[in-house]
Image (cartoon, rainbow over all chains, first blue to last red; front, side):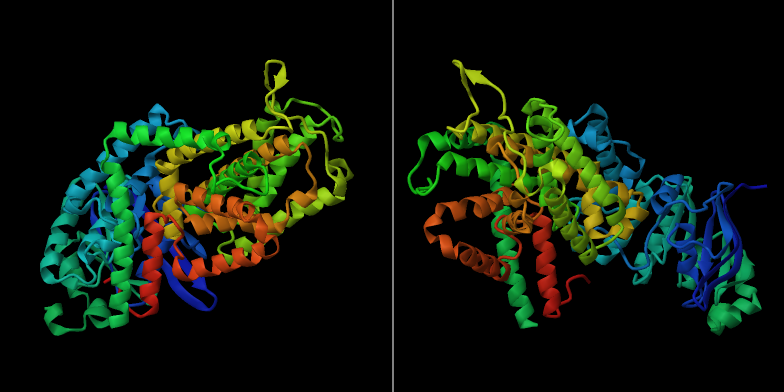
Length: 258
Length: 366
């Protein structure tokens, strides 16, 4: 029985009269790439937000490694080991690429204000270690040539990759990617696919929200489909491809269904 | 579109000019840089002795003016941590300055209501600690607010501190507290710090400015400084990347308050007397003006700003009556022609240039 890293249990989230998530349950297994798909407004990003502590579910619970997240603060959840990227890029635009990643790495650092004031040994050690880790991640993502540039000056594709590098720097066990290929051309998408596989092979578990069906089918081990805040299907890519409910709700196009 | 392009060109030129200076400086050999800084430091210490013409203040004691400038520099450095680095607008900074000054007055003066008569040197750490606590007390409930709301609450805080002093007999009420001892030390049987000569106060103040600059620099180049920057740029993203934003905002407030308290303690030690009149709202505004005029986020910039705010009015005392009018006019002109400050922070400058381009409808970020 493979271990579950994250369990979402009967999660419902209401904003006033709107039900954004309606009794959604699924889990993520250690070491897999799980795809979360669904039409626009199905509640995919909302689901991310519940998992990362941005919203508290109205009812139901989220358990990470068997422990309920409860009312943990967002930065505490990050430290537990859930990291994410954003659908609309949210880097620190005026900080350099390497500084952006270092902010992520700082999630695992312990230098206090006093330590920084007197430049303690631990502070200097963590600074160096953080910088090295950041550079290594930039290399891994293939954007180390622009390490010293302000994030806002990076090309769009680099910004997307930088977000992933920053998320990886927080030392997560579960990496949540919110439409990482949005706005990419087919070539870039193929490269990203390769990267996501590489990330998984390094021992991370990946949750992927994506619109591009080919990308999702090509890279994921399992897929969960949401529609109008409800889970309508769950299974392997080939099962999902055949599922009539999914075809009706989402794919709809004969070539894709074939 | 052409307006936008022109604007962009101007801004680029401006950014390049400043960063050119920076590059030139950072490329100098370490030894040369150190020598230049040492010469500048010695000249600064000698200022009141040399009494250079033009720079000196004909209408008031030059050393006293210089000392006031150092207290403003300290306050501006502290406020810069809050406003420039963490991006939190604080309009009541004089409150911390007052807490520092009153702490020294209460614990040092024989005529205060508690009359513990501790020496000045013992009172300074007490003043710093109490200011920090005041910063944490103000920050605890209010740092959950953002932007304008935080500014309003802090503005109230500054006034509350002053009015509390006015209405508390224990704090000397409106009359204030007198006979605060000066800093210690004697030379040939004469006390170094007296009412007769302001030079030693200036030297002490200048030394503290150097120390604070070094400490603030250490913090800025650390996990803490990075967190402040991240909070300023995107607070939610920072929190989701594991930055305990509330904790670090509170630290920014506490550190800023501590430096403000130190400045107030210096003021009390020199003046020998404090009263609520010394801490009006206007002083908060002047501190903030120093930070904004100099260039928020840049240490050298805010020092230049503090000098502009504290020194220029003294230098031109001859224009007594129109001082504040000229000052106001200068502020307006600054905000039109150089909103990023005299010596801007590299990142802030770009942020402002962006905003301007946004206004004329140019796509900045693809």
